[in-house]
Image 1 (tube, rainbow, N blue to C red):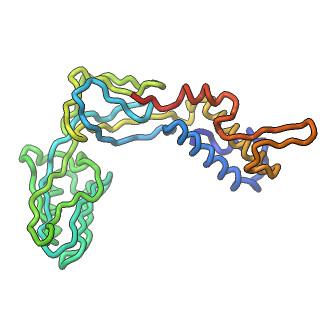
Image 2: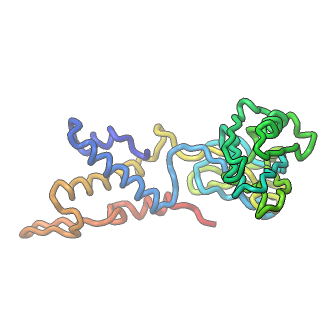
Image 3: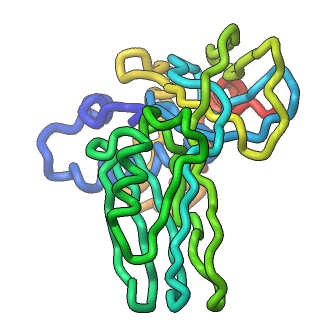
Length: 281
């Protein structure tokens, strides 16, 4: 979260927990609204992304400030895989951070096989596990030089179709892995930048550039103006509810008048928007 819940309660001057549920709801809505308007996340998070190589020297990332880049390079075909079940409706592969999941839908081989990447830690072990699974699964190394490569380096994706189609026997499809990393690139990761400069240029290709990076702010260095904005939004909405003014834009009694509005009407919002809106290039 941009703002700690208990810090928010202190700002509102609320003791006890009787209203915690409504404050939490207003807090969550305020955070979601700010992130939606600014089109960014702010908490420190690790991202695993792929991009089209354009031949240019710059790679602009959607999240920043960039704290660290743990991998930047290209991907290469690593495993040849297919499912030969001609009576199946579908057969596909999913790879996440911990498992390879092999699914056959319909037919005599229908079922799900899960292979833990920690157990089948190299591509050689993983391929042996695929072939031992039966149910029409077959796999080979794309290149014998990859035998000792880590299976954890396979690119993550969902539902890659590798089965037969309308009774026609399947041919091999290819599962990619991250290849040797680039070197000599420069990270421009502070607020308002968020890009990487690579002197050699990012090679052209479709989704061939892979990056794993951490971006955002820790709770200790979250900008005070963002925290203040969340506080002001929740305070505004909490007071509207407390005074039964939800949905009312202006309240007047005699000479006393209060005007309510959206997040964007809060004093100082324009400066915050200009400072933190996502860079678009």
